[in-house]
Image 1 (spheres, rainbow, N blue to C red):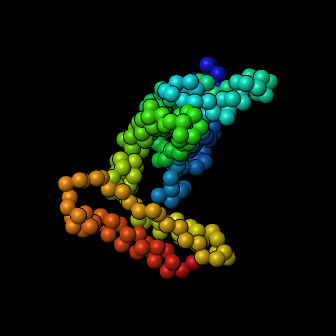
Image 2: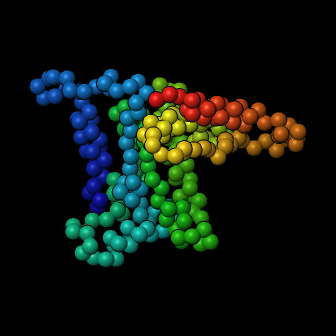
Length: 230
């Protein structure tokens, strides 16, 4: 993860592409996406320390791994660290385009909390530049990561959230199938946000059809999941 490792991500993605190639060296078909259900999601994931780099940029504070690799010599065999990693902090847009080009349907990433809370706690200050960075990453993902160029549901008040009541059905159905002998497990969501409109009267604000429809669909899918026979 030193200065020369920027080429690591493309190399890894090329290797993944090679692995996912449906043809073996002798030309025989091994596996294709058609071997999976139509709604099967192929995705990839990264860890902030391993791919962001920019250890001292954008107002970021030191993480546990920064301290471990930089202040305890000899703990890492080759002396490498995450100061640069694959430099996704500055090149995330082209990296996301690369994921889209490779056909990934989903991307899971982690957040470097020292980039949000450089002092380790809220009382020490919040780094707006770090928040802006992750907002940019999310906005770029929304732009590129829609399956078939259609959003998975209606966009909520936040640009990175979508209203997807049927998702709770799939989650509960999976839970019932996987944990058949366990006591009932209930998983719910904490609601749906909507853009603020300060021009509304109190009466208009209470006539909240968006949330009414959301909870109606939400409960309908919870009921459906509980009634499914396995």
